Length: 164
Image (cartoon, rainbow, N blue to C red):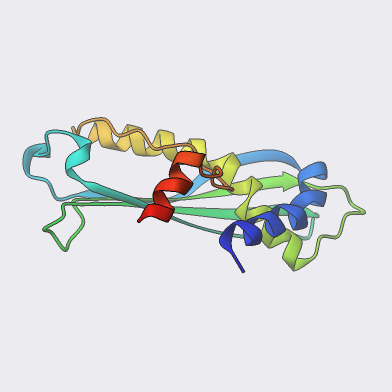
């Protein structure tokens, strides 16, 4: 099944929670920051290959609150290096209130966790990364928007892909 189709199914499965959940709080629960650059020895962020991975999981607690743990990991490497030059990890707990009569399935919770919860917590991770990069005296790094669905390719992109 294509990734876009899986994401579309996730959005559909999360629809009930999207319509009814109210965010109560977002808090940082775990973080790790490292850099292995001598004297911040990188002239510009383009000199590093940056990758971000995400993971999330949710559970409904005894008070019928949905608790989601959103985990992010940013690793920046120089092409020739095996070890990361910059490694920033952060986990956030998001607490949502849901109506007492709403009993979401495991599938709905997972779908909501990988869609809404990630969208809600991504700005906090972006700010965390920017702040930590500045505190490490490294050049600024701005992370892109978090996208659940990738934009459809333009006509030029489709034509270019066919020509390859």
